Amino acid sequence: MTHLETLDGYFTEQRDEHLEQLKDFLRIPSISSLSEHKGDMQKAAEWLKDSFQKAGLENLAIDETDGHPVVYGDWLHAEGKPTILVYGHYDVQPVDPLHLWESAPFEPEIRDNKLFARGASDDKGQVFMHVKAVEALMKKTGSLPVNVKFFIEGEEEVGSPNLEKYIKANKDKLAADIIVISDTGMQGPGHPAVCYGLRGLCGVQIDVLGAKSDLHSGLYGGGVANPIHALAEVLASFRDQEGTIAIEGFYDQVRPLADEEREAYKALGFDEEELKKEVGVTELFGEKGFSYLERTWTRPTLEVNGVFGGFSGEGIKTVLPAEAGAKITCRLVPDQDPDDIIDKLKAHIEQHKPAGVTVTVSEFDKGKPFITPFDHPAIQAAGRSYEKVYHVPTAYIRGGGSIPIVAAFDEILQLPVVLMGFGLASENFHAPNEHFHLENFDQGLRVIGDYYYEIANFSKDELKK
Image (cartoon, rainbow, N blue to C red; front, side, top):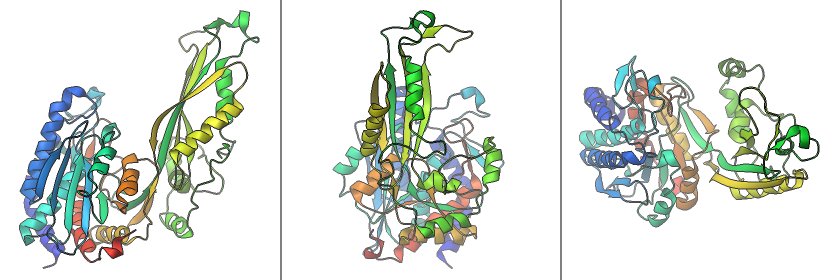
């Protein structure tokens, strides 16, 4: 009997029990952003530690941080074999607006072979799958083909503010050969994907100040600078009409897209016409010479996320506003640095600000981009495991979004990161009616179990970056 047949038998036999256990986990309202749920955060950490113990993990710990705790467990008896560090999070987003939920967010329900609850897809369901894969192997074979360490945090949904400090203080404890994260999505229903890169992020707020208070536009208009006009001038200077960013040096450090990657993206057969219908636009927009996937996965951006200032109520008010502002985010690609981009952005604003106003720039979120070469053996091994279970080719993709802590893993622990997720973009994570497709729960359990065997075929040297 092959290990996949062994896993299949166990997961089929235990499916109902596993789903009931997952429901228990999902019933805990572990909302990290709300202080009234601090007790629930501790309860979720303890639930997870208990599930580690039942699965056969050892050296269990709930490690305190300056915020919510980290849950740790390991099994380190596969002598000479690689070590996989499994990262995930047990915290969830708030549930507002509650009235849009078709069932209570912390009372899990299965409808149409989908499990509905906050955290079902992001990320409790996917973390649970890794625990159960270990449990299956321990129950059926008495051991694991590789060494594993589980490192599950409680602050991902608030930006992991204390995790980098924890990683630096526990580098030896977290030492491994690869990091595996199941907190991403597939290419589509029945189409698995391994994500090998994420864009970085930097965000700023631009504040433009004019007169000391709002002024009557009839008395002062045309004689005193209008902060909204000044802001519009600055914003318009950031990009040309085709979307190319006009900030000096913005593209200097952008890593070129490899020919192999470009061909791989073409092979995905992405339908840009269908995308237009889906999002409700007549044309797509962006840099010349790049496809939609290339623009959103491999090219940097500068986007205005919000603009404020002046009067916006019903009717009209003839005011010359005293202030205006905008919120800006840039998505960054290898090898761009957030601090460098913010410096260039500030220099551009200083150069292009009109006379008669004062402009200040405040920094917000920052995170570095991340990439593991898509031909890395750990990435390709994940693709093979998906294909054995899903029976279709695996897509190798980059993600347009940002998970700043992934870059911290890459930088501090200097390990290849494998993002092998089982969610779907349609599953409403962060929104009402979050759910997890149970066919991906079922197949994902088998993929993860097989992946441990795939990694066992490599030496530690072969997995080095």
